[in-house]
Image (cartoon, rainbow, N blue to C red):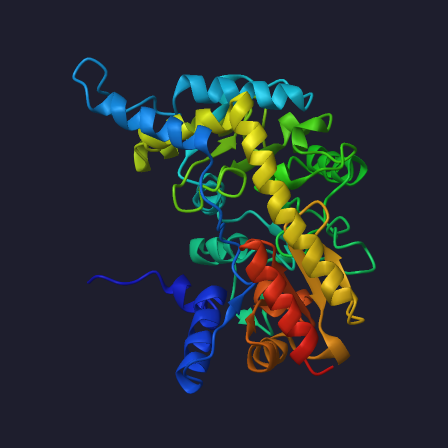
Length: 407
C-alpha cells in the first residue's frame, strides 16, 4: 500500500507567497480596472547586463559546434567557476579550495536539501522571523512535531526583535543545526563580525553546524561588515555557507548558486571531510549539475566587467530601498533594514496584525507587500517591503502610500 509523507500535513496554512497571490487576485477581481503596485516578493526586475549576456551567448555557441560541444559538466560545477569563487572568498580573507565549492541551481534548493545529510534527531535552531524554507524543509523531513500557535514543536526559535537589533541571542541549551541569514531576509539586518563570532564559538564548543545563508551579501556596502561567515576564525570547522547569483546578477529565473562545504567542517559523530563527502554523494546522486550555459553566465558575473555592471544594478535597487525607507519614515512609520540589504522591515502602525495591514495597504494604496507573520511568530506586527522593482514604479507606490494610506 502506497502512503504519503504525512509530514507535509503539518505544514501550516498555505505557503506565504501563494497566499499573497491569492489575496491580490481576489482584490483585482473585486476591483476591475485597478492597477496594483508590487513591493512584495523579492524578484529582480532589471535586465541582465551586457557582459552577462555575452557570457550566456558564449555558453550557447559552445554547444553549437561539434568541436566544442559539452554534455555533462564537472559534478561540482565547472572548474573555472569554482576557482573564480575561491578567488572571491580569498578577497574576503577566507582561504578555501575550489573543490570545497558546489555549484547548484540556486540557494533555496541548497538550503532545503542540505539538511538531508544530517540525522533526524538533530535539534534545529532557527531565527524568528526567518525565510520559510528553513522551517518547512525540516518539517517535511520529520524533525518537528505539530504546529502550535505558529511554531512547530521540537524546533528552537531564536527571537529577532528590535531590542536585539534583529540578530538573535544564542539558543538556550544545546542545539545541533543553526540556521543564520545575513543580510537577513526578511528584516534587512546584517550581522557583525562580533555577532557571528559568538555563534561560531558556540558551534565549536557543541560540535554543532551553522547553515549560513549569505544570498544577499553583495548588497553590503559597509566595509566593516562580513560578507562571509568564513571571515570568522574557526568557521571552516563548523559552518556551511550557501549563496546565489539570483540577486547579485539577476539570475532569479536563470538559476545559479553555490554551497561551500569545507573539508574541515565536522559535527558530533563525524570526522573532518566526511560532511563534504556526504554532500558530494548527495549531489551526484540526486542532481546532474547546473546548466553549462548558465555557468558561463556565472563566470561573466565574476569577471571584472561583470562585477562593475552588477554593482551598478545593485546600486539601482538600493536607491529604491532608500526611497522606500525615507518615504515611509516621512509618514512617521518605524522602519528597519534597507541600508545594507534590499528589504525594509516596517513596524505596522498601531500594532496592527500583519495580514490586516496587508489588506489595508492593498485596499487603500493598491500596494502589495509581505506580511511579517508569514516569516514566523516574531514577524507579527511587522511588514516586509522589497526594493526590487523599476525605480519609477517604486516611487509611484510610495507616492500612493503617502497620499492614500489612512494612518
